[in-house]
Image (cartoon, rainbow, N blue to C red):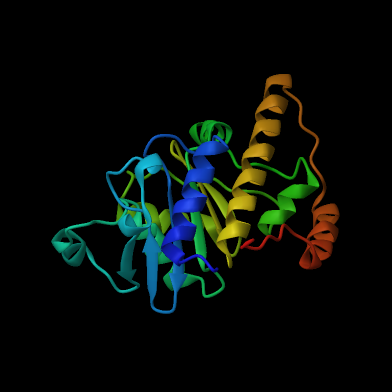
Length: 219
């Protein structure tokens, strides 16, 4: 039996806790379906979220409408909406406060091409945005600018955003980003990082057009 979108969002949100990519009420998850997106709610710790708590929003929702809602979407709904409005190729978003990606975001560093798996996110690096206060329209603008056509970015002094055409793939990418961030933090401790050249990364990116994590629901 196929899961509803609400059930799937709950499942992935709780997996993010299990894998240590979020904790408590941090982070959020959404899925776009047609002209709407479904997103985790504001003010409920993830372990207690049920499918009925997932909030359906129009892609045209605004602040006035949100404030009228009894059950409100995550405070970060702005950037979910903005990504869906800007990127026709994206149908799922995972936002994490994972330890290593968040640590690098505090340094306001990009994650460079120290490992070929960086190409999994669509470019030669994972970039870090400028700082803007959480939940703001200004933050959504910075995320869109930093993300570009890629599948992940860091948010300064905050965490990370991963996007994909599919929620299972977005979860896999969130895991990979944290793994790479962990490796990069360890390299920063050593103090020396050797990166792949632009030409080497172009070759990897070309090869990655037919490579990447895939997964499917198992009934």
